[in-house]
Length: 279
Ligand SMILES: [Zn+2]
Image (cartoon, rainbow, N blue to C red):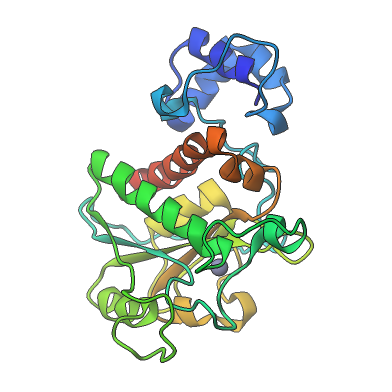
């Protein structure tokens, strides 16, 4: 969505979460006519506000393909999460591949590094982990302000070769999931044609619940037994593929002038889904 579309939305006023989307469409018909792919492209308009001063409620509304995240998974699942969850359900947010750097399962380098030969965001890790960590941090911070019982777990080392080491995401997830915590692991998918797109690969060690359903409605849903049932989901991890790590989203993340707003909008999408799921 172009800058002037953002300010246009501002003038049209109230639009909060999904209910607000309908309101925006009613009050601001011109908004929907804008090419949404370019929602962060500066135009010949008054100078945009700094990202930190713009309320996250100005994030683009979801869609498929999504103006912020791109396409949802091209291999969709058909499960429905029906189990009720308590409003104070402990939610643990992890960053995918946080303990598997310099290993085969290090995550995607992303389009910029792999195809454009750009420098990684942090030489110690694949770009996917860099962004997983950024989103993890933003989701926990925003989730707390929204009243969620949410926390982060991050392993103390970037490389832990033994899956059974108690400090890995997998070990922590197994223990915490067994006591009823909801484990959400943030990921970015590979770029096209290798990636599938946005969506939740749900846990397979427990019945699917309203939180799984809410995330699937916001991001899309992978088959329950995606690739025969991955190691994370077997240990209670819901893998949330935010998006494929490719342009235009990757450019918005890498560009320092659009980075914080983009991260805020991603975090808001996640947190809105979590809040809805526990309500
Ligand atoms: Zn990943």
